[in-house]
Length: 63
Image (cartoon, rainbow, N blue to C red):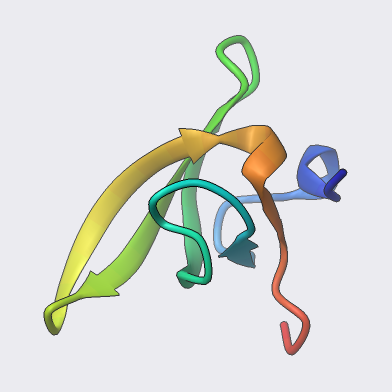
């Protein structure tokens, strides 16, 4: 579904599913054992770290 296995910290990704769908931000960390990825996104103007399933992100189209 996504290019998540190729992601590295610093890559900009788009969340494609779930409550954070359509948010974009840089990858902060990847936990392949738990199949999770931490991103930094802007929520109400502040940088916020979110943790989402690895399968719900893909490399941002303009990244």
